[in-house]
Length: 118
Length: 115
Image 1 (cartoon, rainbow over the protein chains, first blue to last red):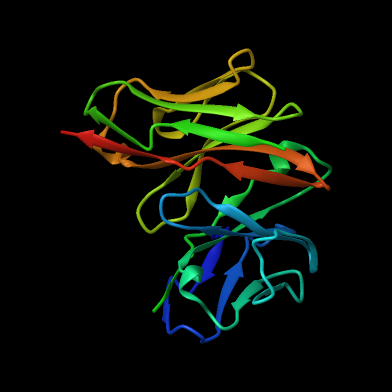
Image 2 (cartoon, one colour):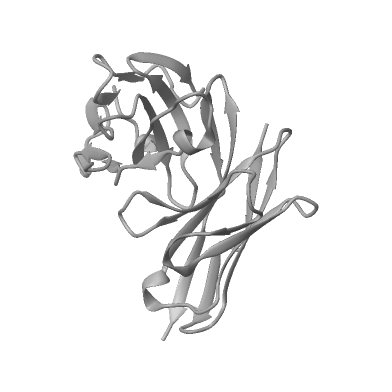
């Protein structure tokens, strides 16, 4: 168990460019979450996958954002035409799900990808 | 809908002193509650969780929290602060919604430990 891995750790881009982040969850976890964290705030939910199905999206996830989890393992989060307001830490978390027992629904977080849009 | 309020965005304590970080929650259904810790440029690490069992919950690194339903509180404490405790702490409330854990975080409290 190597934990949740995110790549890259830091990304600097120019406004208008596209960026893609990758998240590798804990291997036996079938649930994957993306969050955004801005300075001075707690993480805010963006989207949720169960296996390869994207089951929920926050209204924070504008049309410029797209997330995929094609084989139910790793996930990617793409931001098109980045804006300065997209600068934030993007966190990925995973959990094992189960039958609704909270013990299996605890989310484990990666170290995040810090995006800076110039 | 659920929400979390963390009182005090910054807390300073002397090394060896009591740590008390306050968290109040709001939830329309019985909640699950968590404390996470975040070190600079790191992700969130689970400190402890309340899942409707014992109201006094013990976590890692000597931290504990007590669930008080009447006060809708879940304050985090540690008897004696250590320099390595300096970090940002997030309280979170969770309910099961649509078959998954819907988590709402507070805005965080930065803990400074003074030598």
